Image 1 (cartoon, rainbow, N blue to C red):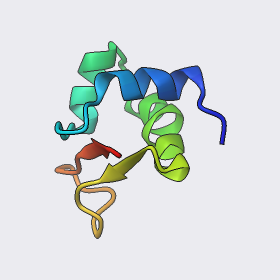
Image 2: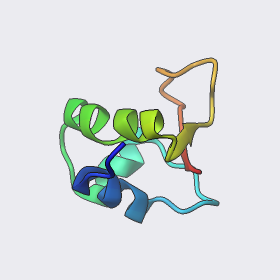
Image 3: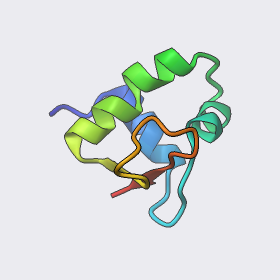
Length: 69
């Protein structure tokens, strides 16, 4: 899978030892729309194996955090 500019931006704000929530990603990247965030950043990054979920059994949990692989 091609690493798009959106994915490059997401990977730039994540570090391997830091787990972030969707709200934190919005703030770090200066985005406003959760739907835009979800469709353009974590979902493609998850499919490409670039990031992983902290709570595997609960992908839509409000406590979900993303971790850089």
